[in-house]
Length: 52
Image 1 (cartoon, one colour):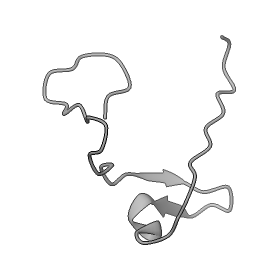
Image 2 (cartoon, helix red, strand yellow):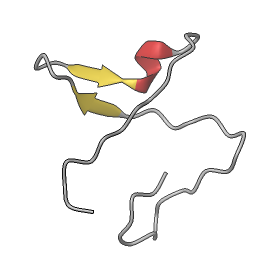
Image 3 (cartoon, one colour):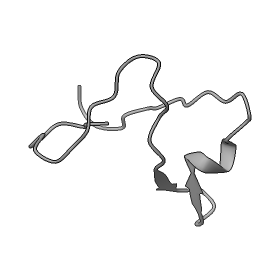
C-alpha cells in the first residue's frame, strides 16, 4: 500500500490481493489493527480532515 511520496521499498497491491496489516490509533486512545478484524466482514471508511 502506498500513500504517496517515495515508492522505493513500498509494495503496491493489486485488486484481489489481501490487504497488508496496519495499525492506527483509536478514538478511545488505544490501537486498532486490521488483523483485529480477520474473518469479519468489515468496511473501512476514511475521512480526510484536511483541505481538498
